[in-house]
Image 1 (cartoon, rainbow, N blue to C red):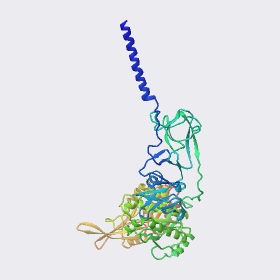
Image 2 (cartoon, rainbow, N blue to C red):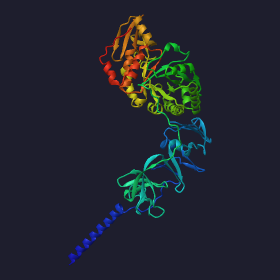
Image 3 (cartoon, rainbow, N blue to C red):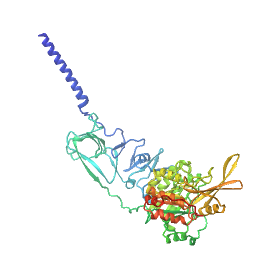
Image 4 (cartoon, rainbow, N blue to C red):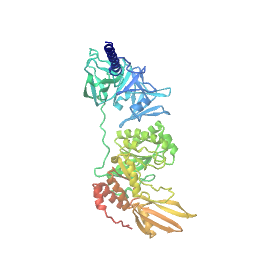
Length: 589
């Protein structure tokens, strides 16, 4: 009998232990957390962008009903390209078709150089800049609202399809995290106050949705307690003039040539009609000083001649290559940039130009972002006037001031076209003699840039010139002195006059000549119809936008026949290969 009682006692004890354990398991793992928590962890004004609560050092502000966001918050979460000029105390915002400037404490903004009144200005307080975000709503395509009940600013992007959820159960709650163990921030008792609530869905998990309530609180709700659907949010935006796509030639690829004009106008009667040429870019505008004043060499007679021949005129605008410090001061001052931009816009209208070609070279690597900012500001103003915008860049991986000073990817996203200056492989002060642009070097660097710039925006640079290299031997070491730039015809005449043996150099894709005179060795890699034929074929091979050549006047007349054939008549690279395979290169005196 005692044994039976003992067994019963042990069974009851074990059952009690198991029951307690089961309750503990239930409590720890299955019992929902019923405690309530505040929607936001910090007191004061909060900010929600989409489905994210934004926590930053500087909090947004609401002053007289107007919402201001910290500059750093806008830059991190809305617009990475917003710009602050501490010297002029100006905030700059750029879109594809607008340039907006706001100076702190001034109730007037400039939008594409036109004054617009503000309800509240941008302000600077203890080193932090605050920007009136509602004014920028249409430019950023965002909807900004302040929900006073929760003291929260909510920002959403306009005109998009979003997913919404509607609670259908009295057990529906929104929690701090995607688990029943997180505290509750809102309940839905399905009474009059919560029935018909609409939640915005931002993320989906196995059993949960990340949602935002109509009052701006962000949390998580179980899928089983809601029904979801997709809706389109249509916010009416201000009407804007439809922007045209980048200009393209009627036929084939773009064929552009630069015209070097630092003095008198060339004799236009001697140039004649150039078959297949689309664009001429004369070197007309140059930065004079760090205040943004420009040198103007534009010529209306030249523009009329170009237009009468069917050419577009994309005037070149350059910095002073010899004054890197002045360029730096200019790029880093918004007032100076504004001054230059105003002049360019006036000149473009006055001379009936079709485009502006930006050619800034010899720039501090530290000013790379400043150059990009200038192009980002200038482009929408030029586009508003219907102008094509292009920029010249060198090959990557060169010197800090001539190569690493370009953000090629960013520039390619801003402008219509990028001109890749695939020449000066061996530059004027090169310590060794060599080709201006051997084909293997050109193609290698073109491939690099195609990782940064879309092929449909890229023009390949072609040299119409070459260099004559003079080598002397001093103490057994070769030294290059007095390199001379020669046009194609001048180089051809030089080798013919000296009765020099010409040989085809497969690596450079050029004819090479070498001769001796007065104990000196002279070397030249010729640019002619053969080398230009090879290099321009890369436009077809890589499906580029076209080619750009430096400079008109240095070429032999036959070059235009080659470019017209490759850029206008050839349909693709396969066609070019078919007509050039097995070519025997013969030097034509």
